[in-house]
Length: 341
Image (cartoon, rainbow, N blue to C red):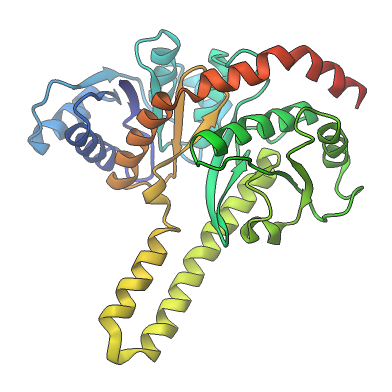
């Protein structure tokens, strides 16, 4: 598999991206990586790393999109920036996947410009698997589409259910709609219309209705769908709360178990690891004709390595073919249902 890695994307790029790429290449003999960015900078870092393998190449790009930049403006001013070049490589079938820890809005916007969607997909969505009391729940969208319509959320439900079944191993995933209350009629127009849409859609047998924020971590649903603004807020609050709770719990437990400090430390470290985004690597952008993994801006080399490995696993799963089969025949029916809703 050949993957384009946005070498300039991320808070600490490009060093962790290169180190993560090399680690992935060592672990995966069938992997090839194209580092996209400034050749002078990247070549020097590769040389200093001591890696001399033939499966790592550099593709020139002109600049990158900073975390503080407005994606659309930046892409217009820098059409050949690192993330834009990554997507062009995949659109031209020169690579099979894109991985980036850069500006999420720019990653999505650059992808939307290529129109590299699976047949039947209206808008791609970013999916993140979160730990819950009963296992893991897939939340999407967490930032790709803040202006969603009911048919978009329906498609997130379909793609999310397929991902949960094929990748997460959940036989019959339950789909819930993130909302401010579990009762019917809750939420704004988008969520009320989406609820009605889902109740009469092909997802009705697995749709359990509205799920409140607290229900997410209770594991009330295996897939929770929402528009990108809400999803991104939920994700960022969750990350901050998890970090706070692990530090608070660790301090309290370590103080109470001084005599068994080493044993308690090992148990807490294992628990904390399950909440650590570096272990997940990246979140897939579902609905793309190819593979796109979006990493956290603060990704370290471990994150990048895991994101590259997850991109390989995504391709091997054949998930895109299953999504296409599920959505393409129903695209016209979905449009008609959405219009009537």
